Length: 416
Image 1 (cartoon, rainbow, N blue to C red):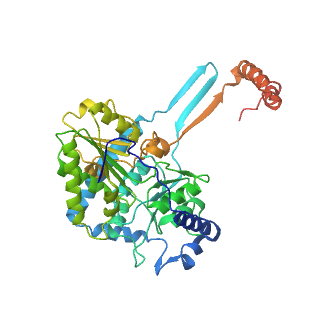
Image 2: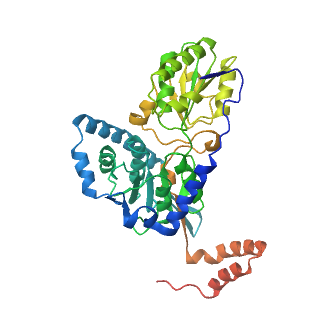
Image 3: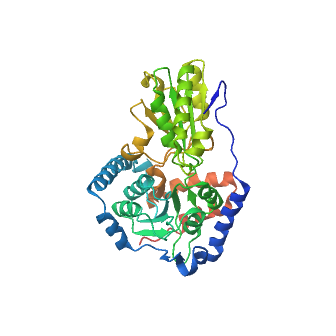
């Protein structure tokens, strides 16, 4: 962990050109060749591309009582949050003037695609449960298979609990392209939710002009803001927990204490020595850094400039700082509120990182139930209202619109 004395804390990153070319080539191959680009005749390895629904039930039945209870608790927490959010999406009828009614409604998307990192259950719950509560009738999950061509059984069990009926054994950029463009086996979706590795992120950018994607899908981040009361052991543990999520994860600490900075640095060095060569946390931890600020006001300014995906407050009075913090995706208040706990039981959602994701907010039900407006004009009020509209059409130079309104004055529509 490098110790910095001044900002900026965020350093620019670029994607390897070879990986960009590979991801784009996979997207284009699926767009052109469909199932053939996913595997021969709809096969990935020797396993079918589509997972049989009965496999989900069997995986659920094989859960241990402890695992089932934990998954059920997480589903309850996430479901409660989603239902409360759904209740806040108000619909209304408005009569701005006599004879005119405007209906404002929230209509769920018809079909969404779900992406999850290999073998990870909590990211699936975070996107599948809101989509179900929002009323999206079709939810298609793509998950990368293992070497034998099958999907992790815990993931299948979680999908069963989320009432997902479509699962395809395909991951990475090819999954993004299949959901975006459709194949003979996988029908296209209206929106893609979820995250993955860098190739998934690059593929989502490539298809973004074709359908809606969650633009907040960037490398995961955790920034800890700590004062001289913070525990170096807890801070280091939180940074390591974040580092194992993503090989591109960004882990950082801002502190007002030189002593805390050195203690965390020493703790991470000690923990890094014990990591196995293939531990996913090795890369992110090697890039971790700590910025020592002169005072808390300066520390808050650095945090707001960084605008992290996840922000952990490990200070003596965290509530005093909440009102001055900006730009974060998710906030964890106090040392006993670790980000990793919220992933599972806190009703957490996929949150964008700062930087390119700044200000986009977490996945919400509003994006799954977009607003629509309907308008109805009372025939008795048409003449009065059309005069106003026709005058404005004249100002816009729209003579065809003017005629479309005028013709109804002389040839009113017949009631049906």
